[in-house]
Image (tube, rainbow, N blue to C red; front, side, top):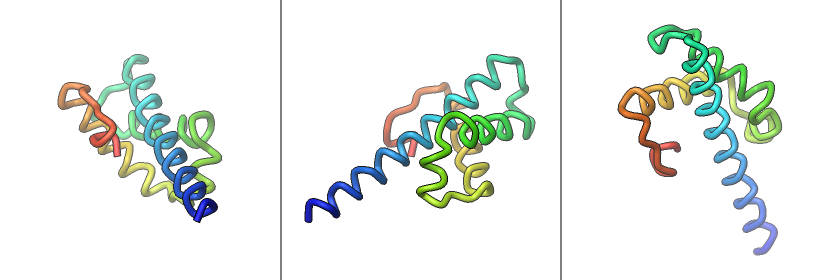
Length: 91
């Protein structure tokens, strides 16, 4: 039972790390002047998550690049709607 709980907690932490990395990558891209309405912002977020923000979590969770792009697009929509992000909205 404890091993299952620890595994679940690790998965939750990895998911949180991944979502946070995508948001950080998007915010950094936008601060650099990359337009929101281009795929460059999405690509920058995915690149950041893969290289710096959450490479271990991505590998452990088995997330594909297509899924990362979809998640980053969802994060971009959160930013465009005023930037208010709660834990529930982030996931």
